[in-house]
Image (cartoon, rainbow, N blue to C red; front, side, top):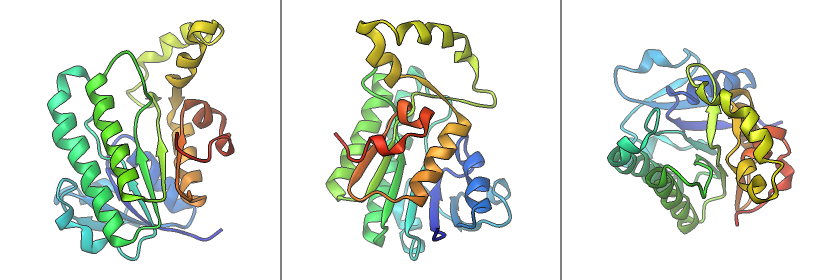
Length: 224
């Protein structure tokens, strides 16, 4: 296995804080974009890049020679009340990262999106879909990962819904949507991202909860 040079945004967040140690343990070089004052939030082995994830001009010249870019920036604990933040943070940072990665010649872009379609969180989903469309426009070799809810520390309230999911997956009229909007664990998410790093996409591929949960990543090879 060839170790990767990775540039990551959102590395101090919910997913990033669990992902970075795993990437380092596998011998990868991790370069994390952080705001000034947040340097202490990443492991000492990480190469710290001071910049603003909303402004590509603050980090575009610091991406090379990284071959992999992981975009994790997003508003914490998303809810319908944060619609404006989805547009000003999630979308702006995603477009900045996609544009910068394209200009820097990154070989593989990994984007943390969200499962869709779904009956709720329409504004959140709309922003993620717009970011996915921008990836297509830039023709980046990319892996788009679409979890619905990631179970982890301080993120466990949906556990009570697991019996309902079990039933809905077995009803023909609700089976497909229940699988698409299934819950995944943080461990499953980290395994999926690490797999994506180690096995770069050619073109665009999408991983959804069924693939994330089972680790059956070969089932999907291209975007729909």
